[in-house]
Length: 155
Image 1: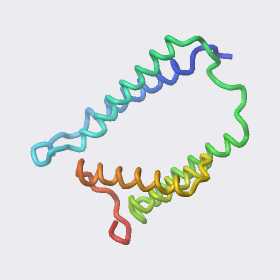
Image 2: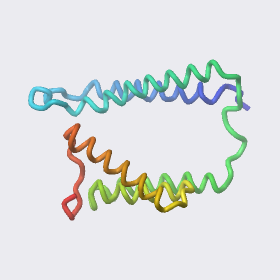
Image 3: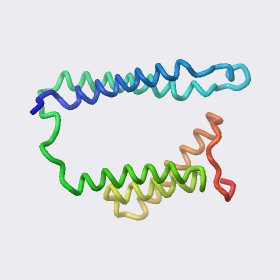
Image 4: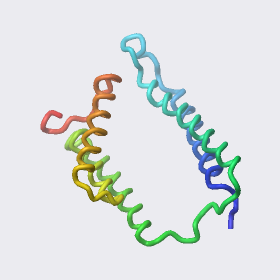
């Protein structure tokens, strides 16, 4: 059994992933900066640097922590089913985005994922879903001026 710290492994993987993201983003064109405030390169580059920073923080926390098993022996069958269901839910969200638009697909995804993760209070589910989906929509469509998929209803 591996006895390294899980945070060290997660931090290393996050750092490697962020380096890959930054490498891919370096090839994006920034010609749009002369016409708009933000080019398509800005947000992925920001996320790459944020992942790099967070990966380094997680890695350093793992280095400072005591060694622990990297993996649990076997996850419960319920946890495996929830993970598979969440992956399928994410795929459904991606498939529905161009058909019903960002707002409708994201509301369905957020509410379903909270129910899948065990949230049973309907008011809390609706409140979180509304706040997160509309905040994300406002951030991308208004502040970053990134067009989001619109559904057949125009939103």
